[in-house]
Structures are given as structure tokens and as C-alpha cells.
Amino acid sequence: MEPSSPTRGYAASKDDLMARLARAEGQVRGVARMVEEDRYCMDVLTQIAAARAALDRVALGVLDEHVRHCVVGGHGPGTEEERIDELMAAVGRLAGRRA
Amino acid sequence: MEPSSPTRGYAASKDDLMARLARAEGQVRGVARMVEEDRYCMDVLTQIAAARAALDRVALGVLDEHVRHCVVGGHGPGTEEERIDELMAAVGRLAGRRA
Amino acid sequence: MEPSSPTRGYAASKDDLMARLARAEGQVRGVARMVEEDRYCMDVLTQIAAARAALDRVALGVLDEHVRHCVVGGHGPGTEEERIDELMAAVGRLAGRRA
Amino acid sequence: MEPSSPTRGYAASKDDLMARLARAEGQVRGVARMVEEDRYCMDVLTQIAAARAALDRVALGVLDEHVRHCVVGGHGPGTEEERIDELMAAVGRLAGRRA
Image 1 (cartoon, each protein chain N blue to C red):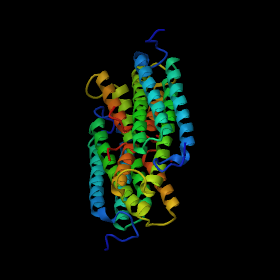
Image 2 (cartoon, chains in turn cyan, brown, blue, red):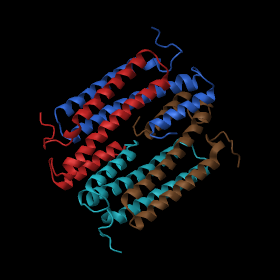
Image 3 (cartoon, chains in turn yellow, brown, cyan, blue):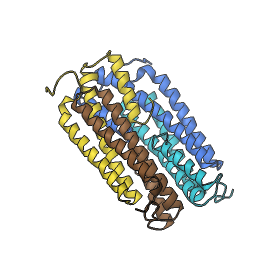
Image 4 (tube, each protein chain N blue to C red):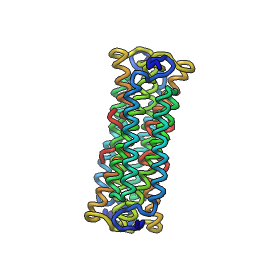
């Protein structure tokens, strides 16, 4: 497998993304364990916030590579205009807006 | 196991929370698979958004039961004042604010 | 005017809320001035973030008083069940979810 | 005034941004009026959400033009690398993360 293949945007940090995702998955499992063990709600919410933050860091990592390789680098489907529209729609969703 | 034990807030929907968490964990694993397979960034982001939404629904479920059982019901540690402060801090964190 | 009237939830901090809202309005006007003067995008975004944070603090203040006076205090329309549902819908909207 | 000046990023939609900002300012004033008149908390929160959504649309509009003119178009201060870092920091803040 060629990690810097031009067909995808975030090759450079694939290992990093995989590590963050493994951590996020572990955190979600940790939430399930806490619910199973009837832990105090506020502690469960703190753990959920940690899992959500881990996912958001993955999303920002994916977006970062997308900007570098697809939007600025010119790789990927569609015209430049379409790629920017697609990027902004993704940013709007991340920001909790329907763009 | 006694599902309506007064020591925790969200007994009523424990099964539901566990089911949502299993789904969220599956979605996080789905993201990892997509990254592993070098899938298109925008599709990865859509899947991350689904996982994050699943986690948020878990958080809102936990908070809902907390309000019913601890804040209104009067179970849980601390005074009523402290429980409301704690609730608002959790809401602030959910809303992306440090309260 | 009776500031601690039972007909509304956040009487205690009305002055505080009005002060925060005046600040938020000033910040929105500040954004408009920066756009008018063609200021650098990133500086405009920083100012928008400040205005948004001010509004979120107002929202959390309103919600805090609502919990104290309506949900816990028992004032306001509807049954306790309905008030909690309404609260959670508001929290979900604040958190960027349709609950 | 030259609307498509290369010294700033979002010239094309300046009028649009100013209109959205005027609307957001009106909405913030509407919130203040509702608080002043002791309106029901939940209605105040709905109005705050409208103001916040208006501000977010302004932020996304500013960011959109920033991507088109500065990041892709190559205008603005710094190297391409720095502009992408700056963009991602702004996206992270919009998404409620410290990037």
C-alpha cells in the first residue's frame, strides 16, 4: 500500500488518524462500561465529552488533509468550485449548521 | 440488578443507552475501516458526523435521566443548588462552552 | 416592576442578562464595522466567535434560571414531565442537535 | 469602493454579509426586548438560537470567501502552509474545538 497515493487526501497522517480512532473507540467502550456499572451521570458525560473530542480531532485531521491535497492540491473529483462548495458544506456540518 | 436503584439517574433507559453506545462504537469502527481503505475524505467526514450524532444522543439521554432523577427527583450527591450548578456545567460543555 | 415575579424564570439575573446582551449587540456591530472596513477574514472570524460566545452565555443564563424556577421550582406552564421535555429539547438545540 | 479588491477575501459577498449582520444585530436586540418584557424562557432561547444561527451563517460566509481568495487564490499574508494552518484553526474554533 502506497501511503502518499494521490487518490486520497490524508495519506500523510493515516497512522495518526488510525491511532486517534482506536483511542476514540476505546473511549466509547469506556462509556458503555460506565453505563453498565451504573456510574454517576456526570462522570459518564465527562467520558462522552472525551470521546466526542477525540472524534472531532479525527474530523479536523481528515479535513486538514482534504484542504491540503484536494482543495489546494487539486486532487479529487469535481471542479475547484465544487470542491470548495463540498468543503464548506463539511465545515458547516462540523460547526453544527446545515451550511 | 435493580434497574430503578436510586444511586444512579438513568436506570429507565439503560438498555436503550447501551444499544445507542453499541451503535456508536460500530460507527467509530466504520470510520477506522474507511480510513484504512483510503476512502474519500468527505465520505469519512459524513460517517464521523453519524458517530458524533450517536454520541450526542447518548449524552442527551444521560442528561435527561439526570434531570428527572437527580435534579428534579432529588437523588444524588450534594445540595439542590450544587446539582443545578453541575447540570448547567454539563450543558455548557455539551454546547461547546466552558459554562 | 417586580424583579422576582414568579411568572418568569430568570428574574434574579435580568440586569446581568441585559448587560451581556448589550455586549453581544456591540460585538455584532463590531463585526459589521470590520467587514465594512475590509479587515482580514481571520480577525473577523475571531470577533464573530466572541459575539457567539456572548450569546451562548446569555442562553446558558436563561436556561439556568429556567431550571431553577420552572423545572425545579415548579413555576411555568405544563406538567413537570412537559417542562423537562421542553428543557431537554432546548439543551439539544444548544448542543446543535434536534434532540 | 472596489468590491473585488485582492487585499481581502470576501469582497464578492460584502453586501450579503452586511445584510446578514444587520439581521443578526436586530435579532440580538429582539432577545434583549424579550428579556426586558419578561417573556417565557423557552421563547427567549428560540430567539437566541436564531441570532446564533445568523452569526454562524456570517462566519461560514467569511470562511468561504477566505478559502476561495486566500487559501486557494493565494492572496493574503503568510505562506500557503501558514494559511492552511490558520484556516484549520478557524474551522476548529467554529466547531467548538481548540483545533
